[in-house]
Length: 92
Image (cartoon, rainbow, N blue to C red):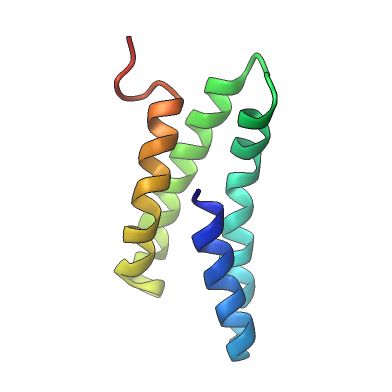
C-alpha cells in the first residue's frame, strides 16, 4: 500500500520534468520486500515487515522537510497496516 503513493509521486515528478523524480521512485522500493514477504510464506515474514515499518517511519521523518506533510499523511495507512501485520501493535 505504501508502494503506490510513492510510485505515483515519483511518476508525477518525472512527468513534470523535475530532477527529484528518482527520490520517490527509490523510496518506493523500500516496500518491495514487504510485498514479497506477504505474497509467499517465509519464515522471516515478521522480521521483514518490522524492518519495512522502521524504514517507512524513518523515510517519513527524513522527507518531511523536503516533500511536506502530504507524503506523511499518504504513508500513515501503509505504515499502520505494516505495523499490525508485523505484530508491533495489537499482538496477542
